[in-house]
Image (tube, rainbow, N blue to C red):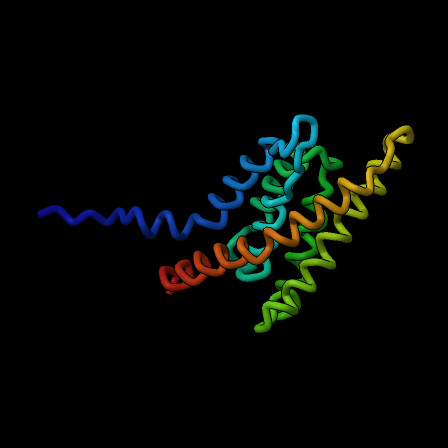
Length: 172
């Protein structure tokens, strides 16, 4: 009998931070149309990356964070390096104090995420307006993007928390 040291389940679980983030980057690249001319811009990849950093800052290396952030920027029409900058700040904060963004109470984690996503969207809007002076700021889209992000957060939190628990089991 030949021993097969390759364990597909272990490989899948240990690569979930990258695979889930890349999956949601691809999902974000596809526009979702509610009506004929109204599309929803989601920030699911930004949320997933934020959650992986908060729950397990060791799971995403800075070089991967740079690449993932640049992919998010390209596919979401953000300023180049914008997402990487904010996610790097989150990684730095979370590595310094592992409980700062992720508390035992999900409500506190949700409030901190809300402040993060709203500030990212405010800065993104400011930078877009500064780079294109004839751009008209659409408050309806701004509110809608933030609402979709805030509604999606608890569901994505459950997904990332489940895979993070599985990852910790395999790492130990």
